[in-house]
Image 1: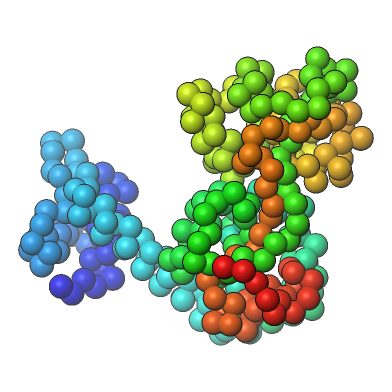
Image 2: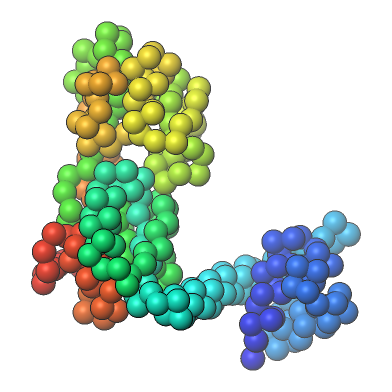
Length: 301
């Protein structure tokens, strides 16, 4: 089989749009050409890729597999073009980094600022993702460095522990739960909550654990930062689950206190992961060294 980039881009556009007509338009090719290309792909594979109905199209199992690989290839092409463009504009290094909400809030900003200040020829593509998505991205080569919670399975990756990063419940001082030392997440879900925006890494993480308990969190309001979340909790709007470091930084001024979460997944550490340290491009190795605070000569898989 021999698919070109136009085939892959067309296929992704068709499934995103839901119809071949709209996918062809998004790909800037005619409907006849789009239909012929998709039939050619199906002929080359010997299996149908799309389920066609009067309402539009959806992927077959083979189509879903092709879409997954097509998106990876297209993303890599876009990154290659961006990296080459950076070289043309004078940037001499580019690092792709994914991190979870806690790392983005507390661990990375100062380290990245120092790194970029000391390396004016470098740029960093920073994306916030849930920890399990970061592991998948590392394994598929979508990013070079991941900073995530050690609660996910990172087998096959090299991991370097950055420090303890437990999740805790924050409550207003004087709240009925303020005298508690520990609490289970299942009990927390009985209260109204304050949280980060839907789709943020921590929001996805908590929603996943709530689903396993057969329920979902009830949010009164969502805010864009941990500090804003804690201030809202301190005003008695609701409770929240945040990294302990956030409470240590702004708990006093926000008027909140932390209660330990009993659940094993909440007692986590923050780790930096790579596929293979020695195989990283030089800019990525330099950034790893800065985040770890020293030249990282050792690490566990």
